[in-house]
Length: 60
Image 1 (cartoon, one colour):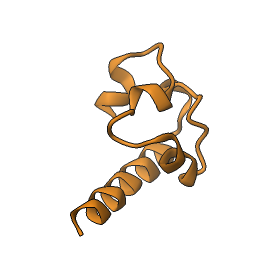
Image 2 (cartoon, rainbow, N blue to C red):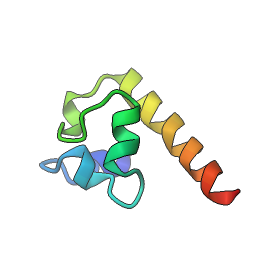
Image 3 (cartoon, one colour):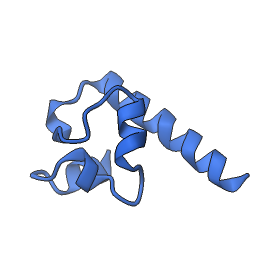
Image 4 (cartoon, rainbow, N blue to C red):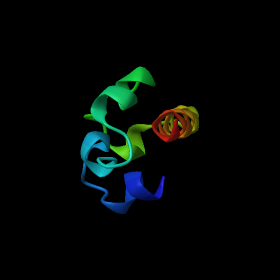
């Protein structure tokens, strides 16, 4: 969440670059062109779960 809101005028794809790529955001059912303030709390839960999954896959 800090990355998403840290640069308010950026889209999620740009704000989360280096954390989740656009494809990983799309897997959550979220358009990476949206801004963080447009997301519901449940969207952030899905992004967090995707982040954990991506990190776990990169460790293996």
